[in-house]
Length: 598
Image (cartoon, rainbow, N blue to C red; front, side, top):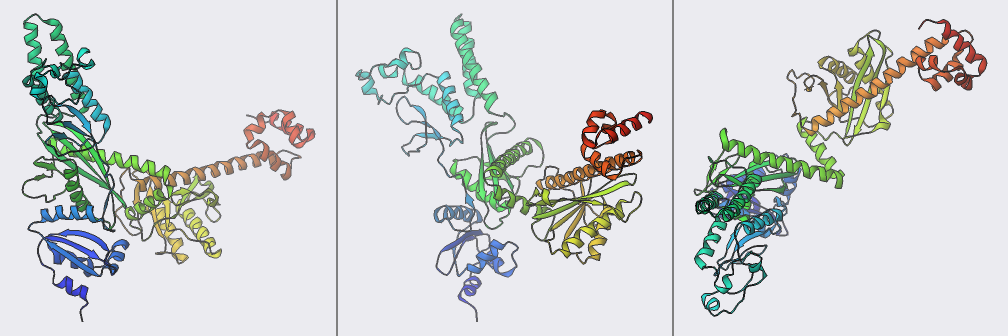
């Protein structure tokens, strides 16, 4: 017999709409949209979900509610509104919901232009919102330099101006206002300035530049050079602002650009607004993932949210994936040319924003940073579990002499130096890296097994397929093959080799996973080569000192601890050696080295 939930799912329509999941206490869990409600909802229950969060949510679902709408684009808008209003537990979190500054042209005679955070529906025009107050202040300073506007809040209707109700203030006397309160500036002329400001706020600088250049030429033709120079200074200010704050491309008109970069837990959506061929605004939004949502779905949600929040009205948008926003918006996925370049610019902004956020998280929340790195490594390296414990092996020798090997250990992505181990090769003669690797891997994990110590989740072998195969033999002998993931890294191209896989894995050179592996490899090389040099130096010193008559093993060890190398012992003064082993033996050593050739 079917449960009430199964009956609800079976009777869902095949139409576009929005579905809502509720738990047994009638608390809202999730809101989603679908092109086909029945197929979409059934997909949650008919397949094994890889994400643990989705599995937990599905187990909690007790009731499904749905709303049918005519088109998928309307479902998208409705979903966005419901998520913002109801805040379901498992929906993505749009993090930057603060209020933003706007530029306002007030609906009144002799309109004021000012910035505000409060949008009042009184017929005034609002431009924005802007993502930075620095941009707003820069715009206000630009406007004040170009056009003298009033800053008072007087009601300058025609009757009040004619009656002489108001008097000019200090702004008039210092040249920042032309005194419309006393009728010194006609309304028509004032409104022409406001119209020019409106175009600047839209990103259209061409009209103002054209008008100023024509006025400058007319003044120069009338021999009014001082006034023409003042207009030229305004042109310079306008051109300087345009060059500094926009990227101009006359082949691109008005459009909005959206891109997305994501990791295991967060997504970052950047948008760039292009107006009259100029980039006039850029903003990056953070989205917290709840159910491992794909980038396409997150981008669709973010585009609707950003267009609504920033009052974007462009008829064309550029995105990296196809999304449905209705018939009134043209969605373009550029592959080449100017539009592709501006989409790449948006993606670069999102990537840099993510890097900045990750740097901050690394300082303020190291546990979250570690968890993210481990999850990324698990995904990139196709591991069955997060590699919280990693070990890396490297061999060192010179033509087979003094062969040694090193094992370095990383825990939670960081070096655990107390767990580092050196190995002197015991069973291999001559330069044989493969046999040396087989020996040390066997010795390392036989000891861990004997001592009942925890095994790593990942082993990295510094070398190509040969060293990897040798290490694999040891794991097989110990019965550990398949229980621990093992891979090799080749230095030249940073290729990652898996056992029995002829095709190497190439990670992005900027990948954090590759950086952790490179750090492991470099640390193993440093640790191994240091041990190799020390062993070589000790061997040379031991051979040299033992050949001196009257100097025994005990004296040799004492000298070894003090002077470290033969060269230092040869260069040491007899008095310095005497302080360590006494004057009689010091004299024997110095006389011996005097008779030896350099």
